[in-house]
Amino acid sequence: MELEQIPAILYALIIALVVLFQFCLIFGAPWGQITQGGRYEGPLPVTGRIAALLSVPILIFMGASITSAAGLVPYWAGWTAYAAIAMQALSTTLNWITPSQKERLVWSPITSIMLLLASYVVFIK
Figure 1 (tube, rainbow, N blue to C red):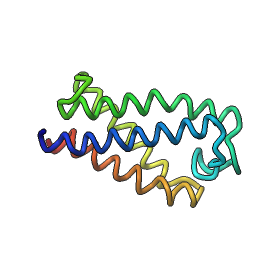
Figure 2: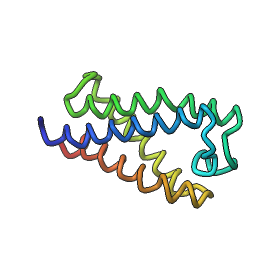
Figure 3: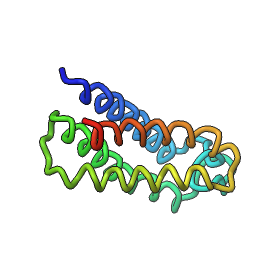
Figure 4: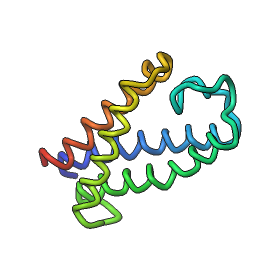
């Protein structure tokens, strides 16, 4: 196993946890205050659940792109990792500037770590 594969695997594991979080939201977990700007108390409304559902394939794409950049499956083209980095940077920025203090406290550190891991794989390898 090469050095850049370890952060790629860690990134993919965090992605898996975030996907699990999204499924919890889709099925009614009362975590509206820590997602989507913290606009909702308790479970998300249908529109918020649809947004959570739409984020799942994007997250999977991001995870697969970073593992590919580290030489792991699914062996996608290199440009996909740059797209994943851009999406991760956007997500990180949005989590740092969200009006929801609870969302900021939970997701800003997580998305920042994810950005560091992905950047290491793509730029430092």
